Length: 287
Image (cartoon, rainbow, N blue to C red; front, side, top):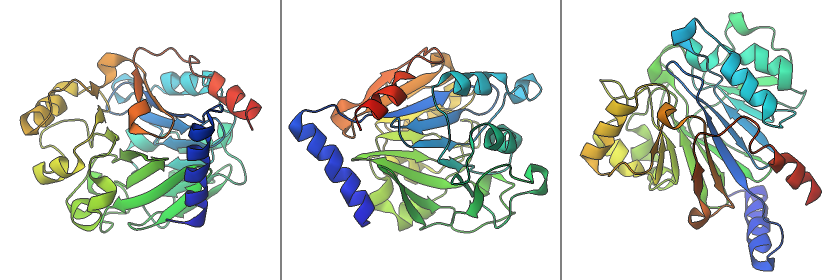
């Protein structure tokens, strides 16, 4: 654990012990429609985006995503993780860079170079993220646990970045469209019993994660991207879960909150854009 991450965890713990205004993490699953959802992760100070999908069933309609972000209260993005380059995950790279990017924004991508169709990047820097890479941003720690190798320049499901985003002791495992056994074999402690899991792919057959890997993850809360809730739910229920903690487009926009502990996790469904925007004001006022 890096010194910065240790300091962030100590600050969270100190806030809990002193009973002062507690920092809070929010994970927003933005139901953009079509095949994918996008994720906004924030504590009001640091902002992380995962993917930037669009509704591929509605001819690449970006409006749901853009409207949600516009009303979220965020003013900039510190980190943008694009798992791979399918349109439902990457089509808005340059759009969101223009709207929310800064000179300090880091765009993590699975390949050495950003595809030409997204260039020039309006703001920030694109960096390849490889398995094993770690970074700290504010109170968040990022660790890449896959893929083992890049197969086709980030343009196929198998190239999807798998990243553990940690806040306090709460881990959010994002997977894009694929998760193979590499993370299970190489980073078992990082993925075991995660608090929040973004289910890989769309829940379609074939499932883009093996049974042994899904058992190793053993998530507490499952966020199912896109419009294929039933297949993913059946797969996981067949493996081990009852299905009470599954959330997808059927739940509308979903927000999971936590002060950095599993015990404090709360899930809100049918969220209206802007409903949690006060986190930014509260975070600034408590600094």
